[in-house]
Image (cartoon, rainbow, N blue to C red; front, side):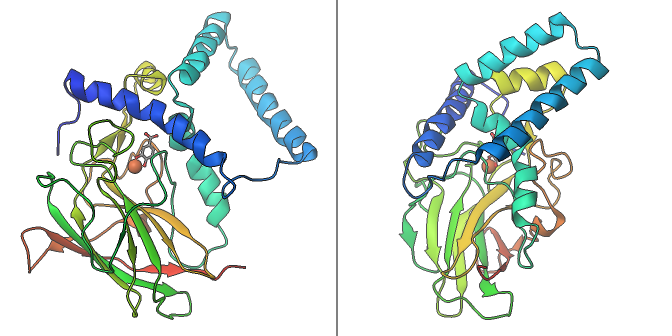
Length: 291
Ligand code: DHB
Ligand code: FE
């Protein structure tokens, strides 16, 4: 496993990632495409009251002290100052939102998006190589498969967006010093719905440890690791888009992912690639029709 615990350069880049995620999220929510109508008053009243009551119940049941209350207040202020709300929410809450959103699906499982997606990555042929540096570290990985509908129809022209961390656990456009679209691409499946993606195997990933989220993790004696993963969005006109992540067997953090985003259906089965020096893995996606 790559050691990602390290020197000052790496720490500085990790801190940047959390803050950049806030700016990116705000930008995305302000575009016409993603802007959603305001949540109605009755629903806000219901949910906000329930949240406030749940927290008050904890304070009363567990006899929370002023010391603890002030520690929480200090910490909440710091989460905002460090730009780490996307990090906090995506690590500790998004998995439940995703469960609610996908519970009706019969096709492939999805999981959380996380804070590092960027739309509009370079479009590649069905069997193209992901944008990467000439000396991109990491084991070559051929990721191949087919996009189908739940009724078995191959989905020609399906779109597969892939983004993942590099061999040190950094994402382009969030950690500085990486080419803009490094390890981010969009593949268009061929007439049989097939794709062959050439990339590198990502490393396990530690959420930034030097901001407010890291402070909570240290104070509670938790760890900051996510298992190595590939992020994907798979879509075709008339079908529900799947946002998912895929994991590698044997990763020590598949069982204790800090973001609770691993599901058994999302584990890959990579084999030595007979035609190359790396790994090959086959994984198909099955999409539900839009309702
Ligand atoms: C975080 C990072 C990820 O790469 C991910 O998939 C989920 C969460 C995070 O740092 O919050
Ligand atoms: Fe990730």
